[in-house]
Length: 91
Image 1 (tube, one colour):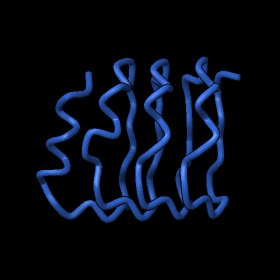
Image 2 (cartoon, one colour):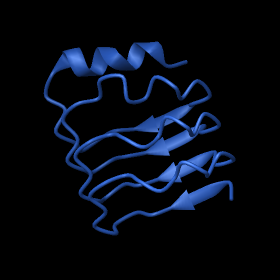
Image 3 (tube, helix red, strand yellow):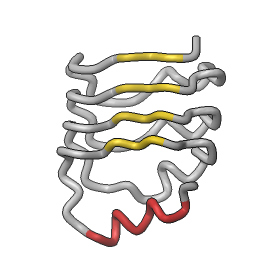
Image 4 (cartoon, helix red, strand yellow):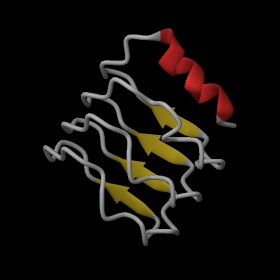
């Protein structure tokens, strides 16, 4: 599986993707996700859509995504510029 679209499914937690190592596109927009967890093994991701969730903190949760080219975090609850600075470690 290379692409997974789970938009608008009332998902609260990212889990169960540890073995989806070939995944390059993941859309989880329009859900109820509060924390960005469970993505560290998805090092082949190039496109990640987490828009319109409940995310407040980014921290180091995306640091392993070295191949990411498109990232959408619009419409979340990220209220601190400090959190946005965590994205500077991405390509």
